[in-house]
Image 1 (tube, rainbow, N blue to C red):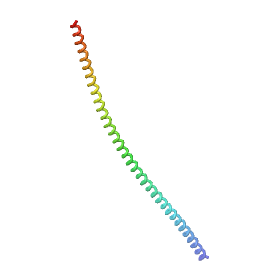
Image 2 (image 1 turned 45 degrees about the horizontal axis):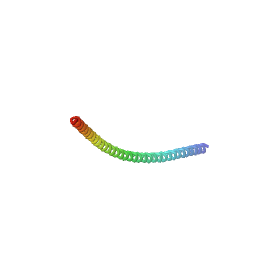
Image 3 (image 1 turned 60 degrees about the vertical axis):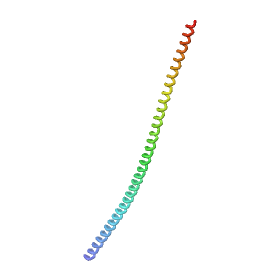
Image 4 (image 1 turned 90 degrees about the vertical axis):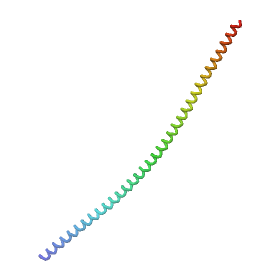
Length: 124
């Protein structure tokens, strides 16, 4: 009986070892699957990050291009303003010249009128 008991005991131990090995293998398989999922998720996150970096680069490039356009438009507008100011100053100068000529003409006419009145008064 002791041989049977010894045999039974070692069979029980063998089945427990086998069960432990199966559990260990299942745990190892679960860990491997979790590692594969984690690696896949990391790769997906890295791809998303790279995509976001590229999108950011494109957005920055577009913003820089738009800024250059706006600066060029502002510079052109400033040049148009400067030209308009020069034209306005020239127009003001011309108006002032015309006003001066008109005053001179009016003064000359008044002098002629005064001379005519004096001549007329002297002739009486």
